Length: 321
Ligand SMILES: Nc1nc2c(c(=O)[nH]1)N[C@H]1C(S)=C(S)[C@@H](COP(=O)(O)O)O[C@H]1N2
Ligand SMILES: [Mo]
Image (cartoon, rainbow, N blue to C red; front, top):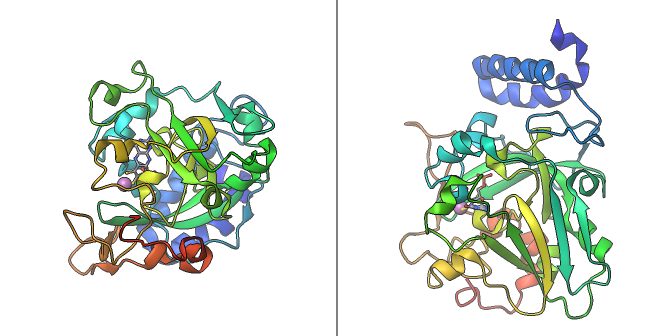
């Protein structure tokens, strides 16, 4: 049996999910993992062949992970926001397959001593990859728990040596109308740009992300590399990054340009500051819907107050939403 040939796929990763998700889901996952193993053998990621769904070997488990029940893989990869591939939640899974994620480069420039353009496979090797299970909260009022794979953004920042003028970092997503059907719609100003203050970007929780569920990122999740900022609303986590710029001024970000009164630069998860059109006090955990699912209370900084609260001491979070 194929499964027996891949003992590394077995107990450590599947058991925790089996405990929660009942036998049917377990069998489904097992089938998926077995198929993935058959279709995409574990290749050294040093080769130029890393592709969506390929297993990432030798992952460390991060101490920064939440132990909460993880959102099923199927929900994580079919309920997405990625407007470059359409605005329905199901669009990215259906249309992002065309995105070519190898070869891929990420240009790091601006206020740094060592500007550098990284090939994606070199970037992936810059620091040891970890599995980090984070709570994610979308500004629309839903949440997930996702086992990401990556390393702290701080590791990249140290590699390029920011100068004293680097006060903010800007993350720029690819904008290619040939590969991204959603770009033809003027829903946002393309390319999608997001940004962080320097100290936020240096916080160990900010993750440069290459995979999920132990595998190379599927395109709809932001392949080949995205940012994940778990204490902020999901839109701060830009996908398919091609450029990272260190700048002196607060970046003009895509959602802030689209509607500054609704989407501020900080966008920290905050149950006490409502969106102008809806409350942010509660959330619906994806995968938990159904008649018995009750809404969850949204936590300050999405539950990461202990790790990030200090960065905002003295800042009026109603004004700086
Ligand atoms: N380039 C780009 N990045 C993006 C988006 C987008 O439309 N384009 N959507 C954001 C929003 S609103 C959310 S909630 C998260 C969703 O990430 P997920 O689909 O992996 O859950 O991606 C964010 N990053
Ligand atoms: Mo979102």
